Image (cartoon, rainbow, N blue to C red):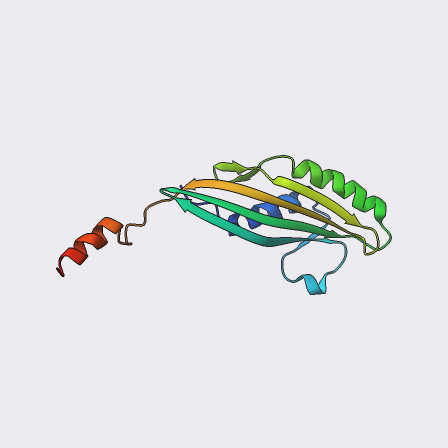
Length: 145
């Protein structure tokens, strides 16, 4: 089974937004040159810890929607749909991960909506056959004694 990583999560979010809002552009390039209306998915941060054969990863993402100017009602309607989307697990390959700590805010001055959320993922670490294990390293060192 392959590991869930940032790229797979990002693609899954982008695909789901495209399916939910087929009439809206989901911009994946650069936030500096947006063409309203559009969505922008942003990876924020990742914190990973490993214990024995378990890897725990916390990843944070944002989905930002830039509406046409003066479209507050559109922002509020999108807020409801995004809230529904982020209250359900997201399928990635054979697993589902659930968005946590979801915060959705709207900015009425610049007419955008920002949804921030995290994923906590616990996975087994698959041993890499080409990497030396600690035991193999110990035996190699004993050859020099």
